[in-house]
Image 1: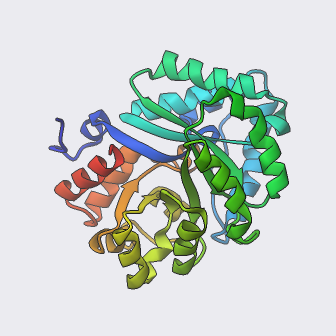
Image 2: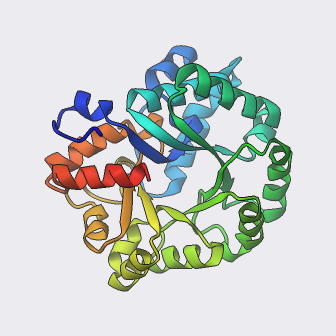
Image 3: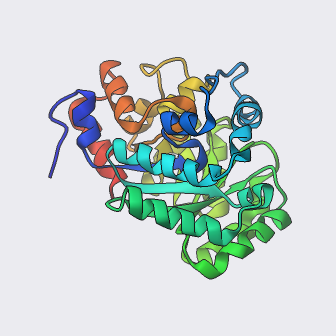
Length: 306
């Protein structure tokens, strides 16, 4: 088995690793997207440290990309290219359940596109496709968006994201019970902007297998112990947290506190197109900042491949 024996970017990219928190259409290799778009994308810069800044960038800077012919296919191709170039061998990557409704892309086209680029670009990746659900949408709308995908029996997990404060998480219990009845892994964003208590609430309410982000749990020893005792993995995205101004630096990132309290954590990209760094770059920056040793990074890499 390969191990981290050299802390340079080429070696880190050569190592198998998991990316368990990846939003497909925002996860592509930037150069591929810009070539298809015909111009450089304006870099994302958060102003207030909230999800609103990211949504504004997507709406004004990235959404016009999808007005181009075959843009959806190019975005999916770019996501697999990015993952392959970073040495990702296990990929849990989401497509918003309402994307097809917004851009006139059928569920069949979405599934076939994911299958095609998985096999043509990165067939060696253990790909576990995921459906994403916006927390700012009503349950009725989300369930209607879910329905066209059911007959394909293709997606392996679900995720709940966007504005953590849009509505109480209990309102999505029915959605998660339905997904679980179909054998799907259950994940949700929690504790990215919310409190430590919101992380435990999300896990208990939706019976989650994993939490996306969850970094606010570092503020509560009791909740960290609870997460550790229940073996709940937090799929953390340090580059995203920095660019969203939720933390000041790699050195002060709370992933170290979580790790020291026995919480299972992984390092992931979130939106590589937006935030710039793959997993390998984040490993290197965490090491250079003195957050993790080589052996500790190896532990995190192993967790991502479990």
